Length: 338
Image (cartoon, rainbow, N blue to C red; front, side):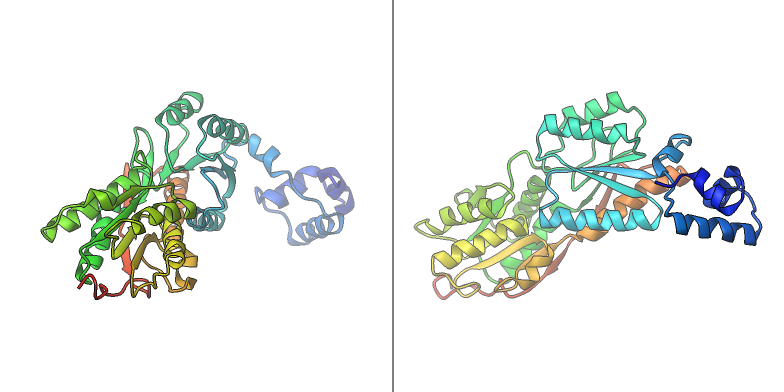
């Protein structure tokens, strides 16, 4: 592997001149700079960015801990964050934690050892114990939570989930549905709780109350939505519409409806939440409450980098407005409901 001394020797210049050309730290005559760049290209020399960063105060690297990057919504957030960071000259190191506290801590230790400049956490359950350990081990490290409520010392970027829940309830009520089932995430999941709060408010505004027999908690997965939907559709009086609190669960609802011989939206309407890329290509295409995953990730990167580069304070919370996306999975009540 070529070294900086090999480049200097090939170009007939000093090591310091090569360093100035690479880092742009001093004027170098154009012809001399050309000789250095030619030597770099010929020898295939790659500067050691980590070693250079250790001599300075920053590595221009962000760390991110997610539950699972295989989740389509998380994947879109990660892409948005990484793209925005790259445009500002920062790289991203990603760790999957599976929402296991011990693994989260090991992920953080690994990222911290690489001298990250800031940490982004996006998990289904932002454990306070984990955040307290991070603060103890790396005081002063900028931290940002995604799709989460704010915590002490942490900035949070999330959609307005209460508004999203109200939008979903309003859409289904406006279509004429009254037996509306709701599949939430696990009880501790704050975004899901906020969406349920909005859903209940939407019903209340129409003079209705939540029918607890039509509410199911589930894992935020296709399997979770599928299992919950099978229970709901087996009720003596099943729902005519289902509002699933993420698109992955809504995919499971569509599968359960197909197995029960229920055409969507003729016999059952289904509404999701997130608007993952897959949603528009399902059969039928999934109506959903959109929170822009890419914008969520990009905003997080911008906030952290502006804080690092320009010393702008990190706000407690940035709330992005959701919007309805009406596709083919929501129709009108069946004749039985009417």
